[in-house]
Image (cartoon, rainbow, N blue to C red; front, top):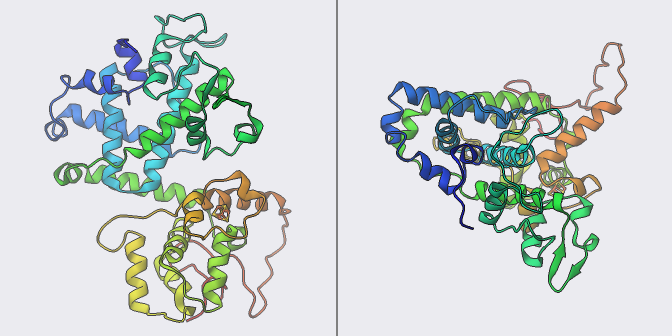
Length: 388
Ligand code: SF4
């Protein structure tokens, strides 16, 4: 589609190629920019953007306080910074946030009764689509003027969406085309934006640039870890998803785990707050337990082993591929990641617990309570952490 978006439109959809082209001449090369005051200012904006992506409650403002080229540069810098942090969950969070923003801006373009739209020059066609919306959708291979979509495209987009309404059995399919409502087209567009923005991360950032950004990357890591601890709180093994329960059961019954199984379990328990020695202890009942080798592997996977790369627990789709998705239950239908399962189940369990104001009973010998997060807090007699 032949359309030249305005600078303001590009700043609202900074992932468009035209947006990046638009700022090419506005700033010096990045290594130079980072040495300047302007670079520090833009880095600050990028950090705010990443922190927003990590926050549980996000605020997206349709009207920007900064210049259009600064908004676009801050988007690019945020992606460079997370690429230096090297954490897959950060890539996921940022891609999801950018897609959410785009979706919000598409809906808020012409405003509502309570808020004026951000795009005062929006021109709508007969279908009430603005030119930037049509252009953006076309860039992501979605035609907003049609109420149907090729089956292959549809299946690809909805494969990770869990809502029943998106399931193919609940759709009318005719001549290889799936019927879609107008409001759903934007939702599918949001999903496609997310997938494509995620696919392009991480960037291959030169080491020297990452070194310049190291203090910022470190602050993001710390913020993220704190958020994770807040989010997951103390470890509640009974809220672990069936796949992780099965891996722990296999371990404690003396079965050797496959490499994929070890990787999935280690990354999962690490993310929910188990520290490195506690994870190593988890493997102590494995028949081929080798303390040194185990520590090395655990430290490597959790990013303490020199590479700095912190791996993320595989999503359900990957768990299925490696045959680790077992004992699938009703909650599994609603999530696409073992960590989401854990979060939801833990929240539900907390809701069900009655507030009792009596002193907590001391555990009977041999019985255990929940495992605590953080160094030195893991209970030695927890079944997930066998005594050494
Ligand atoms: S659906 Fe996901 S959370 Fe449930 S068992 Fe399979 S991998 Fe685990």
